[in-house]
Image (cartoon, rainbow, N blue to C red; front, side, top):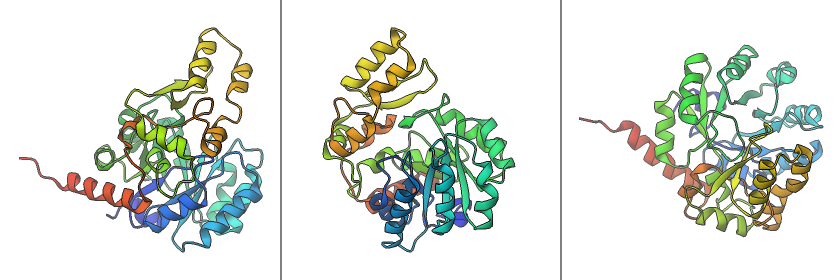
Length: 310
């Protein structure tokens, strides 16, 4: 299936893997790229040299394009931006800020820049800044979220910009893939389903909780202080929401979640850790290889898009 996204990034399938901190490391990124999608290393809050090491490990496994997601609030964002150029990374996705200060450098190096946006205004700003495409991410996604749903956000962004739009948030199978294209997207970004991929290094406790989860098992913390995060419900979220309702100071709440994602991903603490997952968690029913996940999505999605209704 060819779209402007597959042509710009030079990939087989218009599927990007989300740049999830702690989860999206070299094993997962390489597997997705080898399967014809775009694997992405999630830099998160990692130091620049750790990101360089991850990039080199992907390059040792695949010759296919892959990307790096840079969280622009990372104290080492400047250094990571340079590492992306030095290591010849083909694609960068960005979040938590405006990447304009790096655009000239990345463009000169031939890097394709695809920011994550949660509003039409940000999408327009990124287009003016010469972004190659944007990822319109709805609040159905796991982790840090905006306020608009994918269903509402994607068509409005698609109408507002001329560059290609990639849909994200609430997409787990061919039905979500086809729906995204009907809304005006030319590609999709998927995170939660890849958490349960065979090649994902996420702890088995995390995967098991995700696979067993139901449609109503996610919740959002931080709505009142402007830092909403979607995770699966557990002891930590229950306590966080109780304290948040009582008006507890933001910095005190932050102490409750400090290192929580690492605890869940690496140590398997799904009671006190942050088990980030989107609202489609109820559609993730088993651990599968990345290639199998991508092939299923493409087969079902293209069938639905090609289906004729009488």
